[in-house]
Length: 474
Image 1 (cartoon, rainbow, N blue to C red):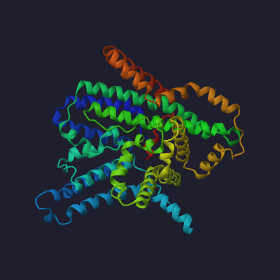
Image 2 (tube, rainbow, N blue to C red):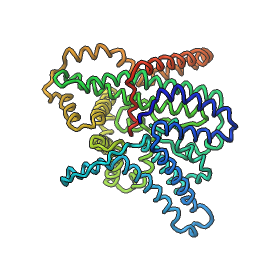
Image 3 (cartoon, helix red, strand yellow):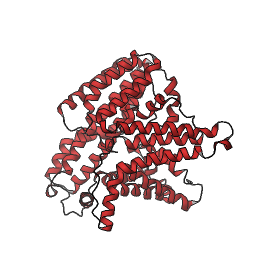
Image 4 (spheres, rainbow, N blue to C red):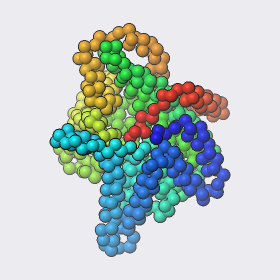
């Protein structure tokens, strides 16, 4: 069942907030847990039991993984290690079964000529995110970085917390462990949350949806009506769409968290101003990059076992990063593509780039980023190859045609807005205004802009059926 974001935003959320703030503080985790389960069941009623099972597994394995810190560690036997491994098997097993079974069946059929029927499993929404969260919790407990959570309700609230349940960011337990029991909701934090939520909603509904419609149009246009420029325009449109879609959702999640007293870490830091791919991956989907760094790259040895081993570790991490995004060859190629570039930068390319002007570094990064999204955007291999042929002049298309000029003219203002919104310029203007005219900024600008964004987004949602959340499928 497709989740109705419109219904949630304008009906479900006010009910949660009202209930949350009228109940005694001791019951607020219970309110969040119950409503989070309702939220998930609304979109995926079949898989609610699966989420509860994941919470239960994390609860039990976390307690046993914690035993090594109690009393004499030698008395614990292998219980902590077995518990941690059980959590790994459960969470990775879930992902492999639901997300990749049909992919493996299809690959086996292609290689061995068998005719095994795919299972046709529906992917549980958000499983990649909450599986990684529960897995990091048990591993951190095993490492002794946090204590196990004895309150099932508190752990369930952490795993199922609806603001970030569907599409992240990946929230680590150690970052909000204290907040689960001792957070304090304030009016300032709530108002900051409303502002952040409205900004995220505007990014998603006004910007991502608008430019996403252009990509949808170009990708569905017959081949003989395209041009080289149109192919680039389509991927540039997708480059903006995926950024404003995902960063918009992250902003909404962070804003909703603030409304309930939680502080989630940032997930994006203006990635399109990067001057290298290394810099880009410090700014894009920060929670995922840091997760793979801390739970895969470093345990594999990181850069501590020589240059060759470091190169192997980087490629393993980036193959898995691509594989995490979806059961399709294009995602694996996308991961390997960025892994190779990061290897080259680490070995020699960053030194060369450092001797070039900043604009050259930025253009280099943008070209590789856009090309990477060209791989990511097309799950159909033939469409992917054809689009790259078109982009690099091998598809027999004209450089530009009247249809491309029309698309450019119709979307020129939107593209300029997207470029500006991809930089810190608007934030810097707001920060300067807050310093020079704090009263006007906080009492006039913020409320007026927030209300305007809500009204405009409501109008967009009511009148436009095109409202995809790209990261829901991951």
